[in-house]
Image 1: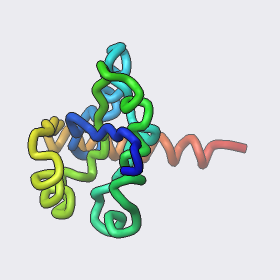
Image 2: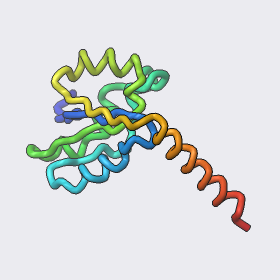
Image 3: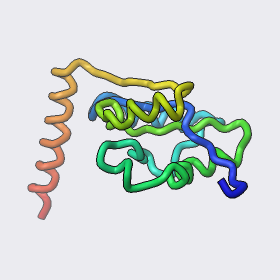
Length: 128
C-alpha cells in the first residue's frame, strides 16, 4: 500500500485466561528472529473491534518485523479462540498461518483464575 512493505503474523496464539499464553509469549521473545507486535494482544479480529480499524492499521503492529527479512512475527490475542470473526477472516486472509491453541484442565484453570482474583482483591483491600 503506497509503496510500504507490510508484514502480517505467521502464527497466532489462542487460548483462555490462565492457560499459559503469556508464558509462551515471553518465551518466544527470547528468540532473536521472533519480533512481537507493538501491542501484546492487538485483538484486531475480535468481534466488535474488527469494523473499527483497517488492515493497514493492523499491519502497523508488525512494522518492526517488516523491516527485517529474517523476522517472524505473531499475534498473541487469545480471544480469537472464541471469535467467529477471527475464524472467518483468518481462513481467508492468512490461510497459511499457524494457530497455536493453549488449553488447560478446566478445574485447574478455574482455580488459578479464582486465586489470581482473590490475591488481587487481598492486595487492594489490605492496602492502607
